[in-house]
Length: 640
Image (cartoon, rainbow, N blue to C red):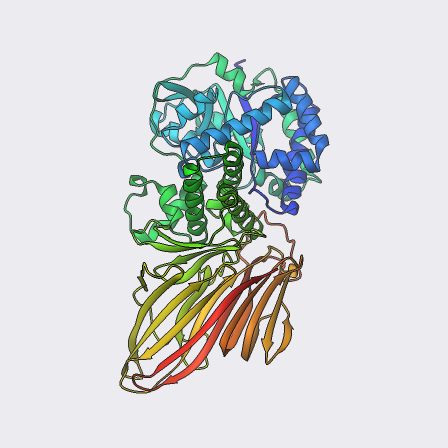
């Protein structure tokens, strides 16, 4: 009877600082039953990958799991794979950061389990040509890529044996991986995948089969079994029963007995689902062949939330790279930057990715902390200009001892507003219906309306740089169009004035039409202070009286003077005040098209909804005569 060598395993990743409920769901649905089931079958071997974020969570919440995992690693039943500590998307970060993250996870595994990993798992199989040198320098001998890429190299004669790849004479082996996944996208028991592969590739006698831990829980839910423990126990019992025909080995054992069949230089590689996501984001670019560009980096530019975080990451990374001084400070800053490099944050992945507000807020908090660390005690406020979003146009950045504020030149809006005390980026709320984020995006509406645009899409705003103004940034924009068969033209001049503890926005509106123009000037913001709606408080101020709003309901009110957003910890309040009464429209942003792995932690709002913050619109009604002018301003404060 022919003996087949089979490597079975599971890879696991969740966004850094995702909710405890999400981590616990994955633990009970996949991590615990896999390990407890395998423990009962001593002859069955496996490989497992956990990100450093998961290891940290397990140490704090389930130390008994770590004890059991340590025992199984030391007796050779389980091989732990290394990789990036926070599972970054390799093409999106520098080789120095990738090296640091790999070393961090390898050091943790060696210290905790007594053995340094010899293999690495790449998040979503994300590959870049520099990885062989990066991995080899970290004493990693082999990694894994999707079998589909090997099929494209070998045609139909795939042997399921590894290929080699090289960079600057640093060589590693790359094993082809088959996903244990059914057509409906959920986990399929390993033995079923193995039997199917034998029919498709009868020439092979070696298989590496991996399962995504995120998909396991949903498999047993559909299987009708009473628990996922039974699902895994059946699988391991099948391999034990057929042990004469199928020999389960670890990847380290396999690497010692097989040699790469040839050397291949992959330009880029991704999992099928991540590649599909990236290609979908490029549809609007009308690219005939997405493989001709770096799809992972290009797709970053096409999601507002991802783009905003990515530009912040690059800016702070650059500032940290330029830092000269205390090495311990620089190391602390790098640690915070790595947390914000979690691969889940740069797409809407299986667990929700960037759409999880708790992970998004935590990433910004880490970057704010990194920024504070390298700034040391130098907190004198200043205004600078830099091309933050890589479009060839400089944007404004203001930093003080209390906050940082990034301005987008094309929309004259606030793309980021960070509190240095709490680490909160109030401008990272998300309105899925409008695909918008940020604050103080201006538009001209029909008089008395927040929805009916008076002007259609128009050209972007113009940034006016004035070197004599050390704390002022000015923009102008001409709105032009037709309404009621009459041409209309309106010029808006918008100025940001920054102080150490607040900033103001001054508006000047000029009617250049030949007739009176009635309209509502509207500025919209998507704001958030916490991932939990109940932790928010919203107040409006009207004639020295305040009124608290229900955060779960849509609210509209006229003639108010100010607005306050606070979070339940009571450490900070965000206040928006105006010198002219305005109308307000406020509603919670709910994302109802959620991922299958999202626990229903917020059923008071919607059983299938993710809370993404609040959409807030401020409106002023005017009826400007020809050549008429209107002036008004608002101010934004952080109070502690």
